[in-house]
Image (cartoon, rainbow, N blue to C red; front, top):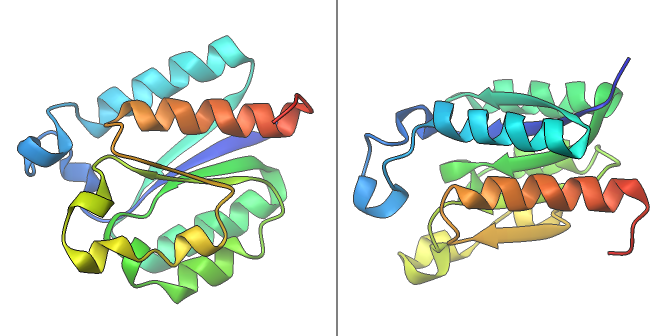
Length: 149
């Protein structure tokens, strides 16, 4: 069975393009998925692109990735700052984890400056808009291909 790069999206990202476009832009999550699928094909890999507003579902997908995941690109959204449970699940995954934030969280409210997910992440991409997903996907492929980091 082929390995996939899991691209996981947390709460409210289903509203991307509609919710606070002055912060998150006008692209929808479907646009991001389309761009990631095209890049994955170019890179010779496959993706599982998933979104949930429920913490437990995200944890279940991380557990699933333990079996058939090449790596994880995750935008945990608000769970970034609150979820020890997602951190614990990510700590069970042996492949690379890249954390994504569409906005620059360090220019926002102080509570957004702390990330539990960063404690496990092999890289963090923030403030690059939705293009950060493609950067994260490229990074996972680089880290798993044996190419120099």
